[in-house]
Image 1: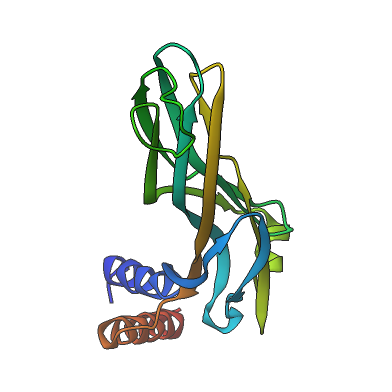
Image 2: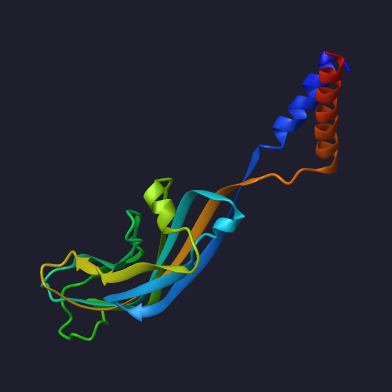
Length: 219
């Protein structure tokens, strides 16, 4: 057997040690709830029998929904900007923190106060069942984070939502907000696993072993 054939066979042996990078995701959510709330999303940890975890990515989707009611009490026209907003935050307890700010804005060109605080007429307005969304992500390859997400069982992700709705524009204004928020989290595990040798690779590896044996016999 030639040196070229031997080198080719040895390359086949080396290729069997290569690793593939794969990934999968786990998911959890919290339904719409009046802010301010604290809750937990529980997801499965990475299964170490699949391979070696090399990266954890967390995507958080925060949603806000509710109502805005405004009334200007000014004696002159004003432009009122009102924002229904929540801060939805996820904390893994392992250094990964993701913060979203879902929001939706409405604008009213109000006249001077029309004499009635009814969130209507020409100096007030109501917007009901409006909603907004924000999505943010974070990732880590830190050994401590990877260890915390690896093993049997589950991991708890702490999630909280604060109401941050605001209105401005009139010097004298009455506002009422109904603010609700929900959260959805996706955890993506990226890991490496040894390739399963294909029949052709096994045959090439066998040829390599045979070539080495023949060369030794010729010496």
